[in-house]
Length: 174
Image 1 (tube, helix red, strand yellow):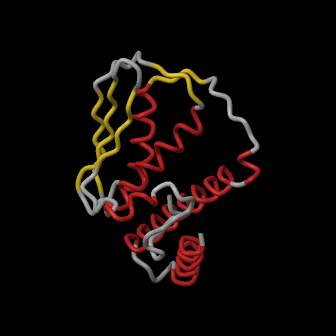
Image 2 (image 1 turned 90 degrees about the vertical axis):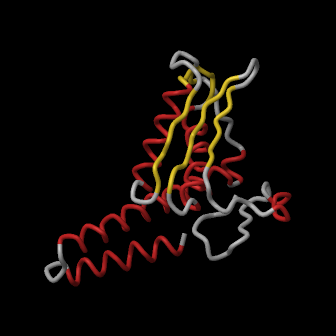
C-alpha cells in the first residue's frame, strides 16, 4: 500500500507546486497516475478487509442472480478504465446473455476483477482475454494473457496468503 500511496502523495505535491508551469499533457498524465494508484490502494484495502479475521467471520449470501455475460462485460469495462493505455481487453463468450448464475455479485466481481487486473498488470502489451465457457455442470470464466506466467517451481505456492515471488511488484500477493 505504501508504494501507490507515495505515488499519489508525490504527484499531488508536484501538481500543487508546479501547476501553472506544467503543460496540459503533463498535468493529464499526473492526474491519470494519481487516479490509477488511488484505485490500486482502494482495491488493496478491500482485499485486506475481506481476508482479515473480521472478514472471515462474515457470511456472504449468494442471493444475486446474474447474467454471466453481463458480469464479464462489467469486469472487462472496469479493467479497461485502469489499463486502456497498455492492453486491449477481448471478451470471448460462447454462452447466451440469458445464462445466469446465483452468486454474490460484489465478491464474484472482485474475484474476477483481481484475476484480470493481475493479468493486465503483467501483460507487457497486447490482448488480455476473458473467455466465458459452459459445460454440463459449470460455467468457466477464463482469464488469459501472454505475460510471463508463474514459474513451474512456484506454482505450488499459489494459494499461500499474500505470497509475492517478487517483493518489488505492486500488490498484496495472491
